[in-house]
Image (cartoon, rainbow, N blue to C red; front, side):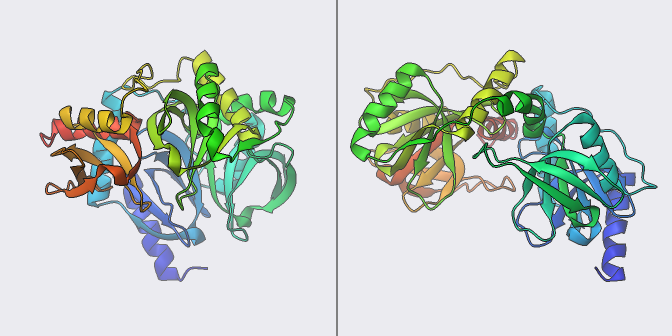
Length: 394
């Protein structure tokens, strides 16, 4: 348990943020992830925030147990920037899939209300337990006085389903009604009825071009794993490919269009053509297209690129000419968001924009050949670009 002073301080900050309608950051203990949102309810056991993602979109809610909170802030440059991002997202009329989050009864335990609501609606939850490092995901199968049962699923292995009994006191953090969870809740009955997909992954580098060319013709979803130390991977369809590089239309975890990524062929470790995860994302994409929510109104998924060009040079030239914000990954594994100036034959100047929206006006010189991957025309980049233009920086 926290000491009384710590609890009082956290409670005071949360109550002030709620009464003054302040956007707040809540930082859980022992994890890098933090949550940004408006305080919905404060109970005896914890707090519920109506949360936003880093693009400024409303993204469901989260319950956080008091004992899991390290600290709370409601006044910071980060929150000021986030408020601007939320306002930009609202002005651009971004599609919000999540339902309106109700207010909860503050006179009874919030965790029980969240679990019971999910049980009644058959909605998916993402739960972090005090005794486990990794999160768990699934639906509530039964509700009891002191604990509840969840049917846990794994999007990467559809055969792996586990029934778990969880005490309310063990549920430190519970995310619900978010963008991805809303689609998952709607489509899981269809996914569960499908046969699990045998995984087919290609690791022979000599066949990558042929495999990607076939994927381009068929316009099927694939996964590209790169050789960086990052655990990230790309999911999407092939837009254009040559012997040196491949450009993909990406799909995000909720099945929406996620912009474009250009990847050097020699950085690819493997290409997955079929898997359970691809089957899940395919179903999510179908949902988004059926509901006409696949592409955010500020994005364009219909761009075509000429594979006979040096695509890296073409995209970099375009980014410099039109002062476009993009993300680059270097051969060292470093990944930064920013914009390009002073393009030469072999180098360009890159101006990093950090998470607090501070812009490095001086910039650093980058060698074109040292860039392993470029991502552009994705939602964060477009919104940030519009924001900087409004401020006269671009």
